[in-house]
Length: 493
Image (cartoon, rainbow, N blue to C red; front, side, top):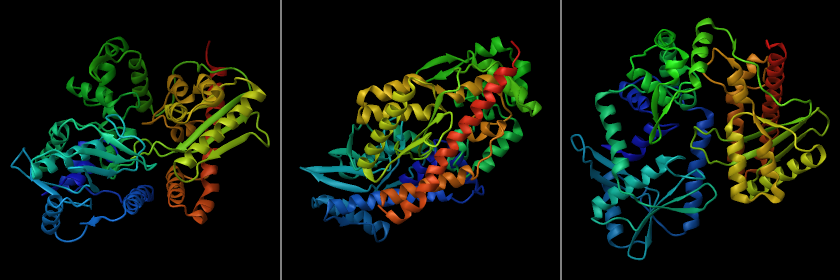
């Protein structure tokens, strides 16, 4: 018997990976869920309970044996019960030896003559790019519903983190049945194909210590920051098992010509080839290798920009909880922040608070460079401008002045580390935090929980810590900027 939710969770959370399914099959020891992920689970449960209360009277089928729940579900569907909570749907899968699939959607909502299947998801969006596992869940439930009633459901919906109900077009069960087949085959026979690790995809996985440690010991090319998943698979097809083999197998020119799948087409490695070979040298020597002179905007006047939200590799809501900026030179009023309160209204108010802060800086100092770290900040800026509006074009001006320090660091130096995260690069710049990344992430998760549950006492207690995390991120960016400028000043012309 196979629970759809468990199978899809093993495959997708925190990111899609069949290694995790195989680790469960082999009984590999895993670390306990972090306090951060436990908070996320509690948030999801809270949102489900909140929506349950909003619906009013429901038939609750969350208790009893599986057989009792299944029979009660089919009876309730036959009797057209208006709202059913935690129904149970079962059917034999059309693959392998026909394992039984069991799905437990959050709600069945009667709509005229048939039922809409509704899930409560702690996400802002669910599509093929963002949080596709929620789509797969709904597709699995639709298939199970049709297998039991001989008709498709009236519709598929998810309720997002802001309580908005979104319809999902049902394209049939092909994608989810293929994913469940893969989980079944790996869970039964083991992993048949190479599955690369990755710093981002593995960061929060319970089996990271097992998989990533082995990849580092094997010198798997996938541990190099510039080698993405598609390229790692292509290199394996070409017989490359260790990054130490790359310099003998390729020149920068021949590696640049290697093609690998990129979406629906093929793409050459291109300019990343020289970056990859330099990273091999850094890993082999254990030293930071200066690649070229950093190209940075000149001047002592600039703005540092940082947003705090959930890490993207988590079941992320897409919501920003802190918008922080800091001007240079430092002064008593250099730091400005805008913090989100409860619900969509809180997120909207925080956004407009940020626009006011940015407008004040632009009015006083003009169009200065806004230094930030990684595309996460820019993506959230553009997303919020699209969602809530851009008064007086302030977000557009900020976007045009953004300068990504991560890209500058990646181009300037090759480091003997698996990631160009700020928490990694800042160490090479000599910056030391007062609290660890994990501790700060957990503070953010607890703060979000306090906001979502309107726990004012807990929110007040954690607010200073969240602000301090934002300020430390900005201070780290300042340190890395100074380090890069130092490299530029000492670089050979």
